[in-house]
Structures are given as C-alpha cells and as structure tokens.
Amino acid sequence: MQPKKSIILVGIVICLNAFYGCAGLKKEPIEKKYFDLNINLPASNQNSISQGTALLVKEFFINSTFDSHSFVYRVGKNEYVTDYYNEFVSYPARLVTEKIEENLYASSLFTPALTNIKQDIDFRLSGKITNLYGDFQDTNDPKAIIEIRMALEKRVDKTFQVISEKTYRSEENISTHAPAHLVSGWNTGLLKIVTQFINDFQTPTP
Image (tube, rainbow, N blue to C red; front, top):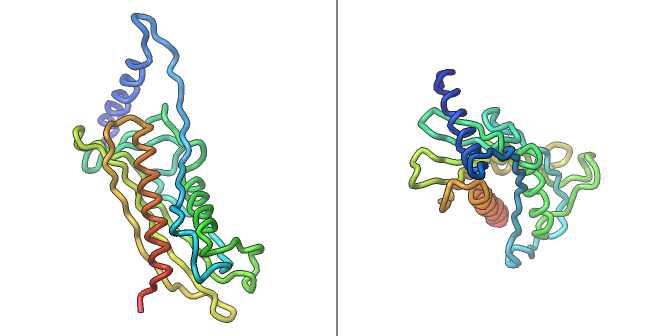
C-alpha cells in the first residue's frame, strides 16, 4: 500500500473516532477500548474416549501484519488500516493460544502436560494465525475474519510425528462495523475452529 494512501486511511479512522467522541462543539478526549476473546465449548464436546491424553500447546505464531494489540481492518484488496483506539487486552497470538488451550483442556479430550519432558507428553499442538482482521471492503457487508494453521504431533517412541496439519478459516458476518460486534464475530469464528479441530481429532483421516 502506498504511504500517502495509508496515511489518508489512518486519518479517516482517527477522524471517525474523534467525531463520535465529540459532545456538541466540545471535543472529549478519545479513550482507548480494550477487548478480550471469550469462547466456551458446548457441553456435548466435553466427553471423549481419549480423556486424559497429555497435551502441550505451544504459543502460536502470527502473521506480522496482525501482530499488534490494535485491531486491523481490511479496506481494499491489498489495503489494511490499524485502529489504535480499539485493542486486544494482550497480544492476539497469546490470547488465541490461551483460549484454544483452555477449551481443549475443558473438552476432556486432553489434560495439560505437566512438564516439557518428551515422555510426559502424548501430543503437541502448534500453529500460526494467518489472518485476523475486520473485513470492511464492502461497507454494507462487514465480516470478522480469523484463519489459523494448526499442526498436531503425536509422540511415537522418542520422537514426535505430525499426524494432522490443517488450515481452519472462519468468515463471520457481523451486523455493524462496531468493535464489539467484530470481537463477537471473532469469538464465534474461533469457537468454530476449535470445534472443528476436536471433530478432526476424534475422527482422524484413515
């Protein structure tokens, strides 16, 4: 994206925030808003014959474009802007890793690996968040986009072998461009991704 165009787009985001922060002719200070992610698996996913399998979840990597507390919006084919006034409470890679980890342990499929020693681990999960943004290319059809590539390794004797490697993507329609609605869309998408991962684990490809 050309530097001049980027500056203009960022300026639009700032102006919009300033507009909504005004009361009459007096401008109020623009306050940042911070958002967490929150997902909970349904009760039907909380039982499995694989209960008790020790899993180590490694912190996920993230595409550098989205490696920021600040929300990222896609406004054109190759154009992105950053919203410095609406942010995650922590780095998104850490947040996504934590939510996936918490829900996998809650599902009863896995238990936390107590150490990093190989013999104490049955499976290792790693991943990379390849897309995490609000898709505002069509102003009348905003979407929350989240895409994660996940790799699951199984311990075989003294080594780990990749038994599953797959990219999971969710595009959730949201009613408005509001940050709260965007976060809700990400939550829905992340829940679908975790649910699909669990289904894939329970029904492995022959």
